[in-house]
Amino acid sequence: MKTRSTARTLSEKIFELKKKRKAVILAHNYQLPEVQDIADFVGDSLELSRCAEKTDAEVIIFCGVLFMAETASIICPDKKVILPDKNAGCPLADMITPEDVKKLKKKFPGRPVVCYVNTPASVKAESDIACTSANAVKVINSIKEDEIIFIPDRHLSEYVQRKTDKKIIHWNGYCPFHEKISTEDIEKAKRNNPDAKVMVHPECRIEVIELADAVLSTSGMIKYAKETNSKKFIVGTEIGIIHRLKKENPEKEFIPASELAFCPTMKTITLEKVLWALEDLKPEIKVPERIRKMAMSSINKMLNLV
Ligand code: CIZ
Image 1 (tube, protein in one colour):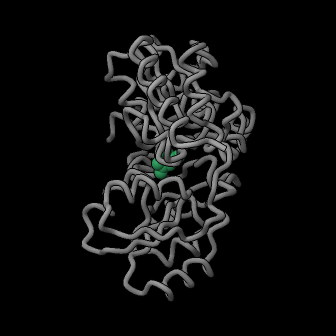
Image 2 (cartoon, helix red, strand yellow; image 1 turned 120 degrees about the horizontal axis):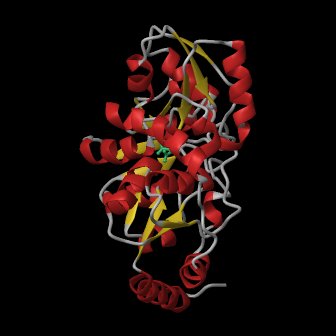
C-alpha cells in the first residue's frame, strides 16, 4: 500500500524531472486526485490541448485517454506528447472507425459529418467538423445543410436534436460509464438532498438529462458550481470530477449521482506512470502527418466558431 511519504517522494521526483525535461503535465478532470494535484493544468480535453499549444514546454505529459493525447498531438505537432499509459483508451471513441464514417457518407451523401471530440484522430480526419459537449449545439447550428451525421455518441446527439431544427442522423455509440447513471439514481439523490442542484453530462441517457437543472460539459460543471448560489450539487458525470469540484469550492457539497460512473481507463494513470513517462519520454503519441492535417481541419473549423 502506498504511504503518504511515498506519495510525497514521488511528487518531488516528478517536479524535479519535469523541470529537467522542460515538460508540462496536463490532467483531465476525470483523473485520479493525486494526478490532478501534481498537474500544471486540469481541464477538459480541448482546454488542455489549447494549454499545450500555448506553453513553451517541449514535452507534454498528457494524463487522460488516447483520443485526448492525439488531439494534443494534432494541435501541437512540434511537441512530444506522452500518454503515461498507452492502454488508456476510451470505449466510446472506439465505437466508431474511419471505415464506418466512409460507409455513412456513402449511405447519406451530401450530409456533413460532425464528430464529437471523443473520437480517434483517424475518425476526425474523415469528418467535416469536430465539436465538444460544450459547443455541440453551436457547431450543429452553424452548418448550412438541414441534415447532419453526428458521431459517435447517441445520447449527446439525441440531446442536441432537442436543441436544433436540423435533422440529425445518429450513430449508436455511448459511454458505458455515463450510461450507468439511472433516473432512479437521480430521483433518490434528489429525495435525499431536496436543496441540491442537479447537473449532468450530455453523455447521460436522455431520461436522466430530463431530470437535471443543468446539462453541462465538465468545464461547464466547474463554472456552474462556482457561479451558482446553491451549496449542494448532485453530479451526473464520471466521479473523478468530484475532487476538483470540492477543491475549488470547499464550502459546497458535491454528491455523485452514481458511484458506478467510474471510468477505469482514466484511472490507469498513476503517479508512478507519470514518473516513468518523464524518465523514458515514452509512450509517445504521434499522429501521422496526413491524418493530422485532415483532423486539424475539422478541429480548426470548430475553433473558428468558438
Ligand atoms: O472533452 C472532454 O474533456 C470530455 C470528454 C468531456 C467533457 O465534458 O469535458
